[in-house]
Image (cartoon, rainbow, N blue to C red; front, side):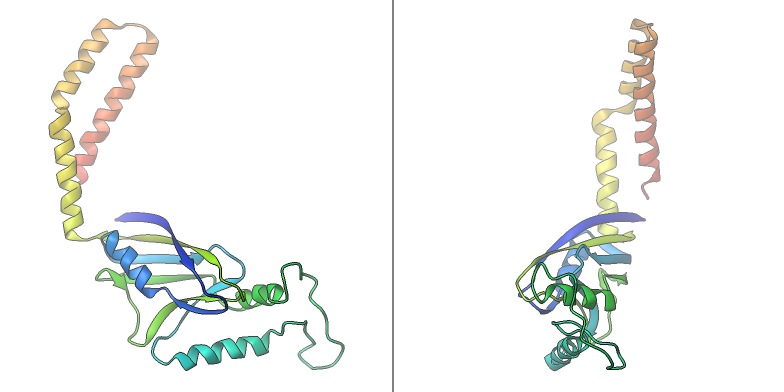
Length: 212
């Protein structure tokens, strides 16, 4: 079982949906993850994540129109319709700023999805979208944290690399060098250094035995 934590950088073209499914699947393939789970989260407060229709673009247009109607630009009234319109207190970054924060709060900032056969496990008509709520183009960071099993080829590569490391270092010779060093140095400081070397060698042995 392996863990991989990285960031995906995505440029949006202003308000609307950006399909990030191909980018997610490419990232999974590049990291040789065969099966597992990936946690996806935006690192912003004015955009969100959504899983929705990947065929008819009118679905996305209707979603955007509905959200605009639900969260007006200029303020809000009570849901009863009674009373005066209340202006947003937070308005330093433009008329779309506070509405974008509200839209983010009403939607999702993170998703947890299964990985199967080195791709996101989605339905036929589903895609993962970054939903931009600001009007201008933005550079968005998306955190990806995958936990899962690597492909067979990747496991073999790790095993080969470990065996290659052990063959190059020749653990028995290293132990002999350490023993000679212990004979030559008797101070407590040197003994501490020798102990650290022993622990390092033991760790290399442990890692090599753990590779299937």
